[in-house]
Image 1 (cartoon, helix red, strand yellow):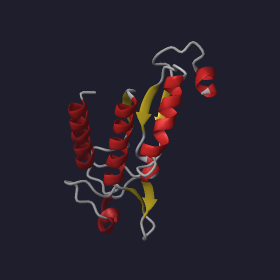
Image 2: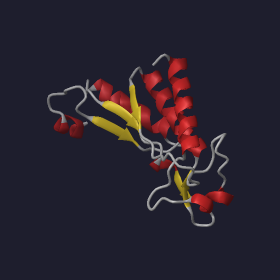
Image 3: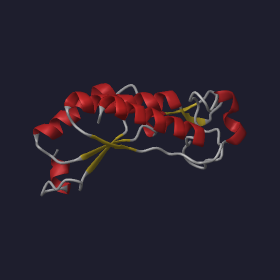
Amino acid sequence: LALCERLNPDNIPGRLTIITRMGADRIEQGLPPLVRAVQREGLQVCWVADPMHGNTFKTDGGIKTRSWDRIMQEVRGFFAVHAAEGSHAGGVHFEMTGTDVTECVGGDYAEVTEDILSQRYRSLCDPRLNFSQALELAFEIAELLRSRSV
C-alpha cells in the first residue's frame, strides 16, 4: 500500500497498474486480501492478470512450457475474485504468436501435448500460446465477460 501511495501520491485513476502473477493454485486465495486492502485505502489502481508466468513448468524431458488449462483457470479465478469483491478486472496479459508453434500444452482445438512440444518450439525465451490457443482464450474470456456483465 505504501508503494501504491508513493507511486501515485495524488491517487490519479489510470496511473497505477497492479499486475498479478499468482498461478492457478493461488489466485483465489491470494488476490482477495490485496483487493480488499486497496479498496479499504481508497486507492485507484488498474488490476491486470498475467496468468502466463505463474503457470510455467518444465516437462519430464526438460522443455519449458505452460498449460492452457492452468492459464485459463487463473483467468477465471481473477475475474471471479474481482466480481466477488466488487472491484474491476482491468485487463489480462498473454504471450502469444500468430504462428502454429507448439510451445504451450492444451486447449481444446490446438491439440498440443507434451509429446509434440519439440516439433515447432521456436521461442528463445518463454513459451507462447499459438494462434489457435490464443483465439480460444479470447472466446473464453468474452464468454466470462458476457456472463458477468462486467
